[in-house]
Length: 448
Image (cartoon, rainbow, N blue to C red; front, side):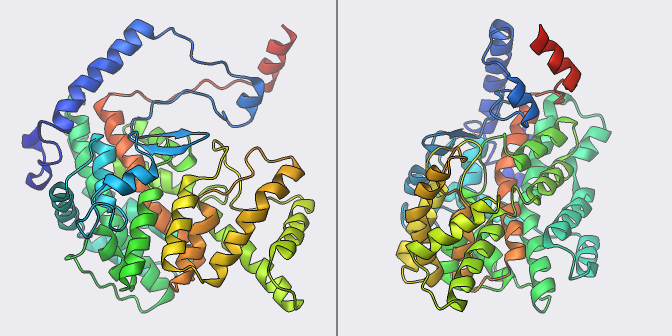
């Protein structure tokens, strides 16, 4: 296996990590299917069928699990546990936020890496990050008024010429080697996304100049390419990128990546599918919707000469709800408590920007909104999700181009969705093909 990989990534797949895990996991999954394949794990209701397959248990997901009460676990670790044990840029565990490379290692291998292993992965990603000239030319030619997410998707699709998986498949590689070639593509996608994203940001909002600093880690170098050189912002980006990586497989961007990948489309094309899903207002655009709602609230009451406090926030919230609109940033398809991703961002704000005006508005919203939504009675989860906080943190550091925020999400989500895609190929998971039914068929079942 290792002889087919680039020299720089052999450490990642050495005997005690992926190379040893793949056959054992293949054997375990095969036994599970053979011995217990007819075991019933749930029933599907008509409401679930019509309502987007909500909560239907029908997908295997290696890398993370989302519990309705406690939130996300990355390979069994909660966010606070990840912050406590994963390597940081300072090299002192728990001093600062985990490096994105550390969570990539964790999601791929299920093992907590050492700082040495993380640094080797940083070097590997930097080595893979050179964009083909045709991609640079294409991205630089895109109109500035094209949505940044559209540009990101175009740029990544153009990188598909670099796919090792597509080349190996065309050359007749055996199925048992698919995951090897997929890993090469996965690391390439993760490596090139920051520069594509930075080119878009600098082209649309500034001078088009992108400056790298590969002496830094993945997140720090990304910040320099965006044009930011504040170490505190580097830490925010490490936190932001880590907590947005994965949220089990049912969310739209992860599921779309998995679905497209199940056709044996290469990881470039598969993750482009995920990015298209992420671009939707009900998914990745949500954080900009939150920020807009907060600013509309603030502008309304400042214009009326009123303070922004619990009373005026309550008034604005009821205006929104009575207009048959949702409160952006509150509620979640799975969670039934405050999103731990919200909590860790709140803790970051308390540490780095406790007096920030917008943060204090968000904190006040947090103190009153759950009771408002409980009284309203039409929201399953009245607590804040990740999007309720992320935009305000970015705004504090002068990153005010909120139409771009989803691109940051897109850079991050590649790590989770593509780590799972590796295991899709390693475990030989099949083409995803659920059975659809007509409304008439559903009526016939009811009448029976």
